[in-house]
Amino acid sequence: MHNLAYKKTLWVGIGCQKGISQQLINTAIKKVFQEYQLIYSQIAGIATIDKKASEIGLLEFCNLEKLPLKTFSAELLNNVFVPNPNNSITKLMGTSSVAEASAILAASEITSAEITLLVPKQIFRLQGEAGTVTIAVAKSDNLIF
Image (cartoon, rainbow, N blue to C red; front, side, top):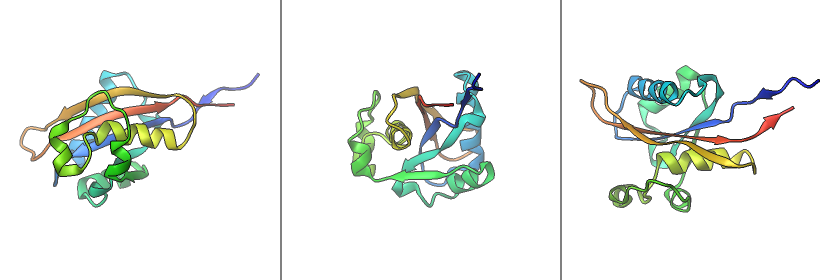
């Protein structure tokens, strides 16, 4: 009998304000995973808009957790249908979704299987810290035998 094992199928999409800390990202992801009863070790990677590729807190988090960071252009993100677009960020970012769209895109790049947005965007702040972070989680429903 085959031993079924799920591979890392969860992509965490992140939208953030400039200068956020690795600690804020870490806290936000852990809260989301606890609340939605997701398994942290199933995170395949982190995804965001290319404009955030050099965000220190994000890079520190990916380094610490040994997770890849995938980035996408505003044009690509803008083509993804998301349940919660935020039109007020379109002028700033060139797309109405960063967290949800990048999570969906990252998950869909690795498979043609069904993609599920498990966690719609959640916005987090930490008391005494600058900025906010937005988290969304998408899953590619791929089984490995």
